[in-house]
Figure 1: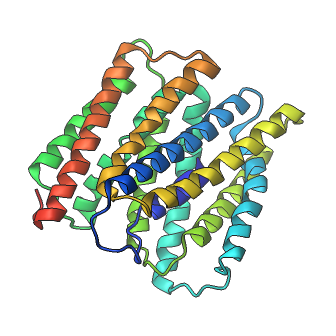
Figure 2: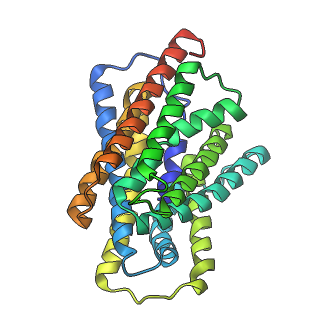
Length: 316
């Protein structure tokens, strides 16, 4: 999760060298496929981590996965010759804000993931596009019309249905997932403030190192578990899944139109429900499905209204 969310939002920024032309249907289809694979890779990582949490603490898992993942990211940075890139002081401010928000997101998300079904955590996280839109309107003064504000409100109602506070089936850890949503929102707003000169891989590497260090700092507070070969295989597969997610997120955003492929991020729910059933025998109940549908539909509608806003030049 920590690498996923340190990489993915930056990759979602407009790529400076993209040609301003209408994408061919074949390119959009390829982009949609790449986005779906991207989301599958991230959900596979989450599933492996949840399986590991049966035996080991989240801090031990964060630390050990970082030990495996950081060399992969470092090789990417070195290969792209970005290790000595000059970064503006203003950008460093937003990079460190991202890192702080990412630490919070990782802790809250993984704590929730360890205690409640994979599909529920993933469903709550799908509210991120709505919260980012709201924060952009409030803090970045981006224009958001009444239709998208209505979509945000209805989307939050969907999250409430998933969480179901005060009724049977409620878990306090659902609020951890909501806290992760707000941390991710802060991180994404900070990402928007970064200039296009800041390399994606470098920011990902810095974030990965920071969260791995945080995991190491927290290790004395948990019981260290001696890992079996199965644990190491799961950690390695989780790290590989993250790198694949990074690779396909870049491919997706450079292949098709953002307005076309962005809604395919919601395929994460399909993967999460499927893996939750296959690996953990967690079947989502009717209220979770209903809340998820509300969040997904309002998110897709918001992408649609955003496309209309860009095409018309008005905030509607």
